[in-house]
Image (cartoon, rainbow, N blue to C red; front, side, top):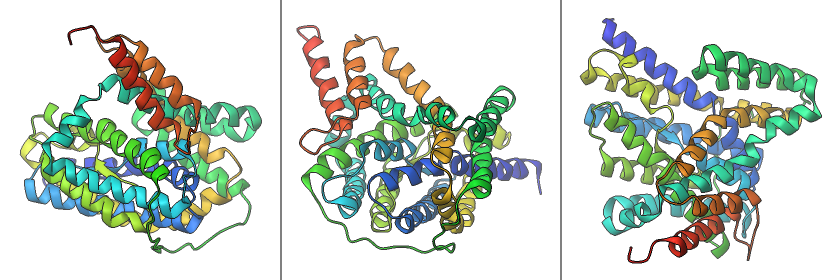
Length: 383
């Protein structure tokens, strides 16, 4: 195997390994929070792996660009803090379906894309930061409750954060899973991959409180940064095609429990950077390897879900919270470093972190409303 091809394959394997292990627990927590049973959550994790794997293969082979897809980790965090919506799990599935349709519409309707871009980045990032706070507090509260159980997880993360930051979160989660097997109870569900169909229903509360924030978070925190990462390495992102592929993948995966797929943002650089080979024209091989790897990983969804379900309370959630610390830091930095006044971002952050629910609509939506209102009220006259 040529050296450049070998580097691309290794980079693709690393991208898939880091992308999956660092955040699958967040996905399971999010699906569980909006009403999924363990079987439905396992189905959701399985279909997300399949749709993002197939989508990555399609885009990388078609455009010969190292474009990779991922599930929406910020979106999963949003689910975890939003909780049950009006209409329960079927309504949440309906919200996932609407998100996919909105992403497809973004590719076709320029005005919709313009509307998303009109929301100040600081407000969108502040909303994401507020959503992440409760999840990032999990390592603190869980360690206080069970210090001996959580100590190996936290120490693993801390040691690797100092010497190999990329592997800190995956390693901490692996340690948590090992402890879950050792200290967990004997509950288990199906251990073989199985898709579970849920017929979508629709409720106003789920559309406003879940679909709209999930769409905005997926666009602002995943798709836009993902395209920017590709551009930073000299590639022209296939924007419209990516929106169509991820939108269709989200629509197709929704009845099986998949909440959203999108352009990879956090892990995108792994397959687009020189680490994937010295020849930029050959790095698409890394993306192909990533897509194929997700298809290989997909059958593990049921087993991992069973381990998480049987784990002692707070153990896996703490590892997931550690994985989100970097995302939280980046969101706070983006929210507060803008040239605009910080009051809209602070107001957005506080409302999102509060976890309030008004008229059956969760805090994420009201955080956006609050941020936009404060932004308009404080905007200099004449602008």
